[in-house]
Length: 109
Image 1 (cartoon, helix red, strand yellow):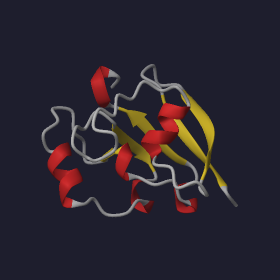
Image 2: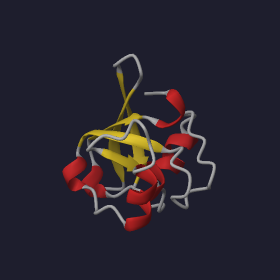
Image 3: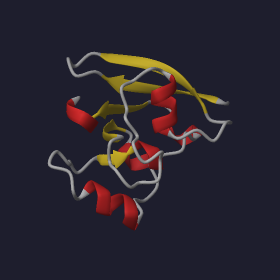
Image 4: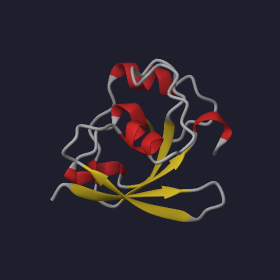
């Protein structure tokens, strides 16, 4: 299987489901930008700006561990939650099928 379902919770609470490819090495940030979500990603995916902050509503347990650099950036945010991640640090993989995320960067929360 090369496509997974990714659910994006919009600010109004509605959820949109998109199909994401797992065979292209895309990050969640790149996938969201390609689907015209308003993600600044100022640093280009280097975990240096936190403008791609998402809250993982469901599926957090299937994600890899947070690296030191990602945690350091998340720790600077006023709206961090215990399920916060930087979407630039999450590569689309088959185990992420069905994950639900809410875009938190730049006031979209």
